[in-house]
Length: 387
Ligand SMILES: Cc1cc2nc3c(=O)[nH]c(=O)nc-3n(C[C@H](O)[C@H](O)[C@H](O)COP(=O)(O)OP(=O)(O)OC[C@H]3O[C@@H](n4cnc5c(N)ncnc54)[C@H](O)[C@@H]3O)c2cc1C
Image 1 (cartoon, rainbow, N blue to C red):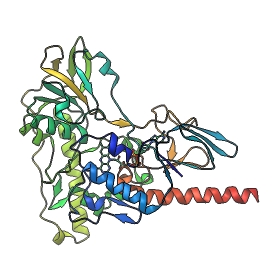
Image 2 (image 1 turned 90 degrees about the horizontal axis):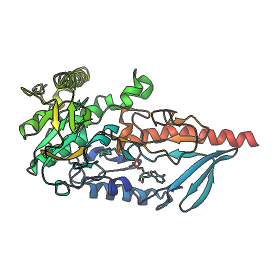
Image 3 (image 1 turned 120 degrees about the vertical axis):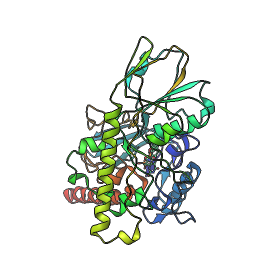
């Protein structure tokens, strides 16, 4: 039984902005026994297409889904778990927590010091530039969400200031192929969680600066600078109506360029060692991220220059309904490859759950197979224990 508080594909229906397209190409939209079969395998789905894609899978898979049923509490019992919902209570031996990794926008507490004259918006509230108040916009965060919104808002004719912290730079295409083709083909995306040295850090890495657009454009900081976006450093504090930015732009840019070039080097090495050179174009290197001649360290939020702040500072899961002591002090589920630290409790859909690709739609299948194998074995052991 699948319990869903809203409708099927709820997060794509309710929590995304109007212009969003997947940043993963259509051929990568794969679920067990089901994949994209349209005419544009290299295109990127609109939200309507994602909703249709997932809804069709729900019908074809025949899985019993109970929609408009919010799980309000899960408690452990001797026999398994008691599940309270807005639509009646249930008992079960095992649970897979597949409630998502991005339930709530993660906004730093310094937003509370922002003057009231500024409208604060999260990606969950944002739909399109028309919904922002007239005037300049400060966007905090330059990962996938931040760069996409900066691009859209600056093109709507507003002045945009982008506060840039740690980020992951990627070109949309490399040597003639989508960069996510390289991640897949070279095996980078299949790297398993137990082969990664600093798993905790990798699980918290920001999303790559990518956009899915019909033109397959690269949306890096150079593209945004050219479009007129002003870059400032990481937002460090808001004090006496002033937004204060760190001065580390040059280092942030250099680090992101270095990591991107290292990854491109890995792709080159893979193509060479697997004799795939003929399938791809010649190696490319990209212009380093341009450091502005000067970058402001302060922005007076009372001056009227900026009228709204978009907090593109990431998302976090919400486990307020899970009354089982399996959440760490950072609010993350304690698990080993989706096997949660409580008998019969499992998880799917979390960053680098079992592989680097786990965060993505196409990452679910391999993870689900292994997690369900463990779950089935657990149930078998329970049955044997009773007989
Ligand atoms: C802005 C954004 C863009 C993204 N772009 C891409 C992309 O281009 N390609 C890609 O592959 N991935 C992308 N992702 C990641 C994407 O969210 C995941 O790949 C995929 O949605 C994970 O599916 P899921 O079912 O695990 O989680 P979700 O889609 O979050 O689904 C979880 C479901 O659980 C329900 N739920 C939560 N709590 C409860 C409760 N207490 N009771 C009942 N139901 C509950 C929610 O309503 C929701 O429908 C993006 C994520 C975000 C935030």
